[in-house]
Amino acid sequence: MIASLRGPVLDVALDHLIIECAGVGYRVLATPSTLAGVSRGAETTLLTTMIVREDSMTLYGFTGSDARDLFTLLQTVTGVGPRLAMATLAVLEPDALRRALADSDVKALCTVPGVGKRVAERLVVELRDKVSRPSGEVVAGAPVGTSLSVADQVVEALVGLGFPAPAAERAVASVVAGDPDADSATVLRAGLALLGKGAR
Image (cartoon, rainbow, N blue to C red):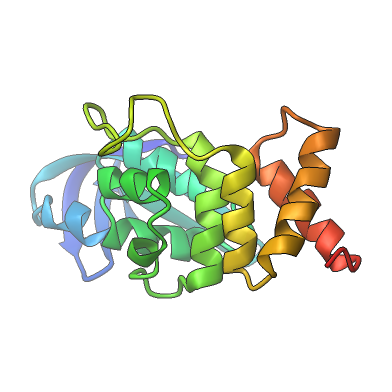
């Protein structure tokens, strides 16, 4: 696995750069902000993630570990692959993405090409508990450390997915009663399973 690259930049394009390391030119996909920080002929260092598919091996490059970690985390959500994860980071810088997830800002997430309301809701529910708000920020009007409960988050997401609020509340209450310590992603999956069985 290639975790980082350092060397002179041979070329910079709209969505990638080519960096030479030990005589080999590596094509690395990157966000516009990353590409804006490099110039042809100058030496640069990139942290990378290598995605291996049956028919391809693709390198994605980042200037910092925060962006790379978020790139990996985004792909844990069903329906989000490396291209959509990269598009998300192209539109929302790491701090803005963390803020959008922490605030359940579906509208901000929907500004990413390819992310509709359902995918945005899924991102919020599955990742909100896994990211921290940018350092130094607190929720306006709320004491530090307060947030919606897991049950409230999941009910909100289920309603956003089109389920009636009473049915969503019953399904979530049933799941939480059986597993009070479950995280939001687990409650969402179990709630969807109940609703799919006709728990409406």
